Length: 277
Image (cartoon, rainbow, N blue to C red; front, side, top):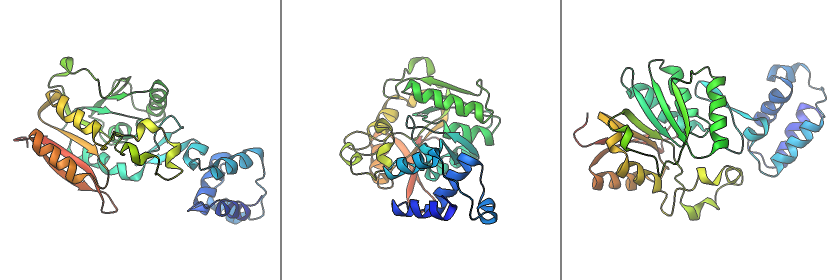
């Protein structure tokens, strides 16, 4: 099966970017670049691995899970169905942290998944340290692999298993310069309406409760004492959640700034206690 034939196969199964996905697959399986496909247009890539990959993609499995990796911001990350696939929208949150965190800051992250947020931030800022919390043991293992893959020392990024909705507060009073997260924020009833590829991702990483705000409410109501003076919360949010998040912040006594992503959608909520700078 040649490159052109592979592109045609991906087109038949309604992949939106068949050429891009074909190149990703060939690079992952054979180390083939775009230049290689141009120089050897008749090369036959037929193999059981190619056949299996096309079959899995036809069933809606994301190409990132099939090849087992994704590029995010400044790093390469391993991914599997045990973790959410990092997306470019989340890079906005990383950039905000890189630019806003003070020198030698220590921050806390919930729902780390692949570890994409702290890894990207710590690679850019070698003065920072982070503690990341993830609910599932299998997902913790992926984040630890990615920490090693990107040469982040364990003493700079501590990754632990824990429940963001039950995380202990008392021993962490005024310890963190920021508390950050890309939490589950899809309404429970909306999860089943998501695109087929997205439904292959972990349900627990998508379902944000009846109104999609379960985790934000918990973070703001419970974890403010863990912030240092002038510390802040920074969360990824759904494109249609800015008004609800802002209203929640006002009622709870926080100031809220909404930051848009590259497509112009509301994407990050930067939240500070009233009076903080």
